Image (cartoon, rainbow, N blue to C red; front, side, top):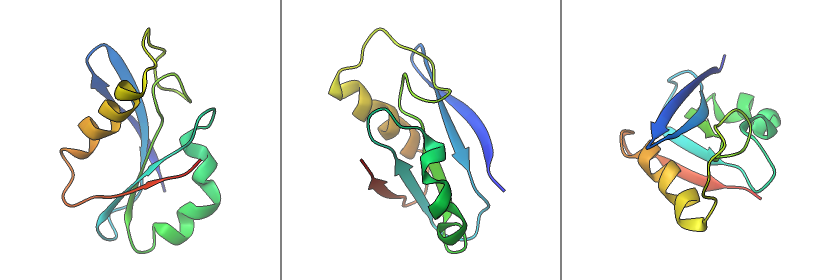
Length: 94
């Protein structure tokens, strides 16, 4: 079962979903015009071996809208998220 939560990066609120702790952390980042739910078909398989974190980028899904959508901001948000995780694996899908 996945729980949705939020974390803040400055004034931006970023939505993410977290699966059960069944192994090391893996962080999923979606492509442009997507949201974390697009990983739905993969979640049952991945969550059997990993603790899955699926992050919505700023302005996507339930993350707050922002005044800046430059590439450095899209990189800074998930970077701030993974800082607190122990040895995460990051996968980017487009």
